[in-house]
Image (tube, rainbow, N blue to C red):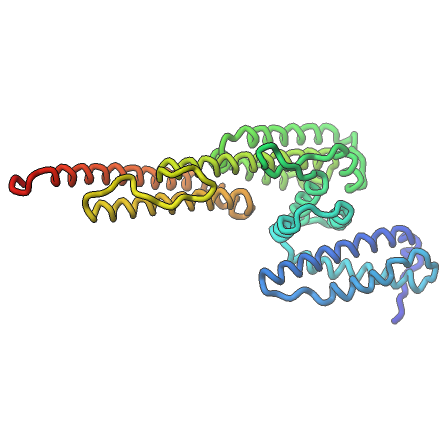
Length: 364
């Protein structure tokens, strides 16, 4: 096979630049190969065989920079084009949620590899909404580290050299000509962030549709999203929101455990307790009603716990819950009120049966 490229293009694409791009694409191929393997296990699908073939050839050519053979350099240039085309096709089938689940499964990533993957997305000549969301996720992970709080919460902390790291990724400096736009944008981000961080519960966060406001504002930024100053502020806010979610999630879990322990009159434990009766009923119908009420309470507990976990872990579910936040809150409040009234009714019925039993049979 002949690998011919125009001399002008070949001169512009220097040997060093080709080596750097090949390294970046090799890491990105390895990332997608691993991602596809994990997704294949979960969804019973097959990884793309072309990706493995290209990865093997890139590994064989990875030391080409020591060679001045024009045919080798031409093949590398051809391979880079082919790899980019293949990755674009695979990336088009890869959602942000898939990448997020991948990181949740593997935990913290090698920083150099993560930087190469982020550079791949940043180097795309035309970025769509999915690219922006992926860059949002990747840059935040790259520019923050995992820490554990005193309460054993999994938090993140922004790295010290945030601006410098993002400037390297964006391959640009903070532009003075855009200073007024950047200042106004950062101020608006901080305003949105303040409202989110002042939320006292997950319910407040959902009902206020604060996360949707944040997402909509990021979408409205267009290409300004990739300005180093603005992207750095977005990373700071992403990390703060992540930590706020952890705080509210743990607080909600503690509240649910206390609520269950109080209603079922058992010690407060991490797992939902086994249901018991509030009193020894004197009639089978009271026993049955009491059991049904306790089952309803347990189902409602599970519902609230499930919603809390979905808000924390699933972005799509979070958006849906946020859209229906007010009606969901009203529904849960209505169910809680119904259960409370049912328990009060059962106690009244118990008192009635107790009084009947205390009356001699001849006087009934």
